[in-house]
Image (cartoon, rainbow, N blue to C red; front, side, top):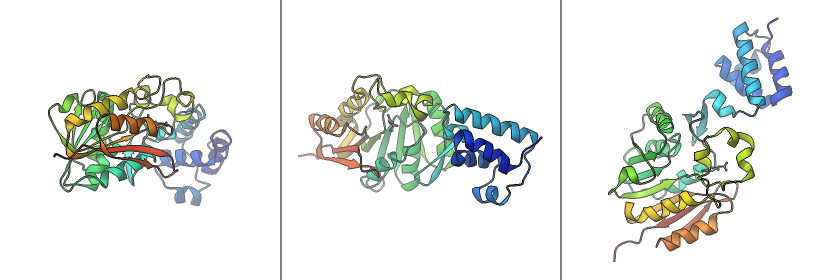
Length: 275
Ligand code: GLN
């Protein structure tokens, strides 16, 4: 017997909660929340019924909602996501805000480890006159990022490679990165969505999680224009060590910016202006 929307939602809610059940039903039926609420007696087709059960059981095993529905909202835009990329997180909007405030008119920006392209594409959309470059070592991630740039009509120059290697000899007004920074062995890696996200986007395997940050900071002076900014997202307990890394690399105007939860989240510093 085929179920009504209401019956299917009630059953799913027992396993995955009502919020996720509604999100998955909206995705499957291609409708909004209002339609769902207004049509509880709508009867699912056999195929919809089976597909809904399949989505619910994958969610019940912990598979991220964002991967099941294929998108996640970031800075007011929908981004395609899949298991090749980290799911964009609200705290990374702090990195975007910090970048928008420091990108000079018509300036150039480099996004290292772009993943889904959420940061680079957002910057290109918000500052259409800027030159935006984005690098990732994963071809699969770059395919997702390119699709997101196309989806939003953003002009981003993508290149594959490790950190600065695809942009050797080039200098930018701004370098931004949300690199892997979770320490190897951190219990968060085996909890929640992180279990299903690409390991290389979360941790580089270093004991303190900061090898990638060190590579980004030490390579930055050769890739920033005088007075240019470096902004790097980091973990909740990494602000002090990041600031020390920036200072040791000769950066000035050091800042630590908190995310909306009040957690220190972005380290920033400026390449010394000439003279
Ligand atoms: N903020 C992410 C988390 O801990 C980690 C993202 C990253 O390593 N860049 O959930």
